[in-house]
Amino acid sequence: MSAYSISATVPLDNAAQLEETLRHIGATRYHSLHPFHKLLHGGKLNKGQVQAWALNRYYYQSTIPIKDAVVISRFRDRATRQEWRHRIEDHDGDTGAEGGIERWRKLTEGLGLDSAYVESTEGILPATRFAVEAYVHFVRDRTPLEAIASSLTELFAPNLHEERISGMLKYYDFVNPDIMSYFSRRLTQAPRDAGFALDYVKQHATTPAERRAVCNALIFKTNVLWVQLDALYHAYVDGHVPPGAFVPAK
Image 1 (tube, rainbow, N blue to C red):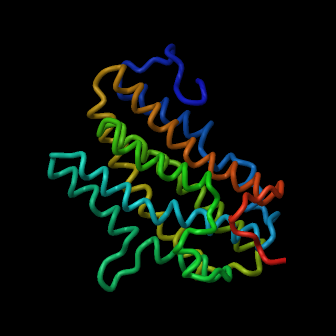
Image 2: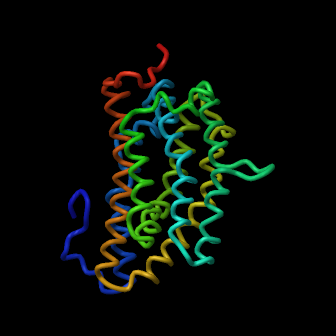
């Protein structure tokens, strides 16, 4: 594999080989492996560094329903649009129902960040904005099959959420179960979403070339997630905060 694609020698002659390759990509490239997450979940960050992570991640979370609306727009098939639509409701919420964005805002508030500042996204890192916007452009510009395939990081999310919940509650006295509700809710939502997407690509990627495109779409998405943590590490662990970005209180 390269940083952007799987090797041409990887066999992708059927759906079983496709799934095997997708799971290998997750096992070797998912951002659970990033050093920043090891620090976060192991209690090695200070409150300001955790705030920086939550602030930057808010931009990703708040953009997901925009991304999903773009995915829906790619499909003439009504059944696919209906299936995908609940993802927007999961994040945006509905009348009288709290969504993922609200739960993430609860996390940032619980960490002591001003909600207006968080929602303005003025303090996020440039790399965060570039990576998230690249994701929206990807689902807009690539094939509908690749757009769905890029969501397959959800296959690997539940284990990460479990690790995050247990680690952060154990090590940080400024974290409590209430502000971690985003992650507990995703323990049931992510497997449902990932199951549909996996079944979809296995059914609709019918040639080795299409299966390769599916795998490379997942690699692209792992890069979107990974580079955001690279930027956080560089800024808030190594101490190279770019001009205008969030600076934690001393």
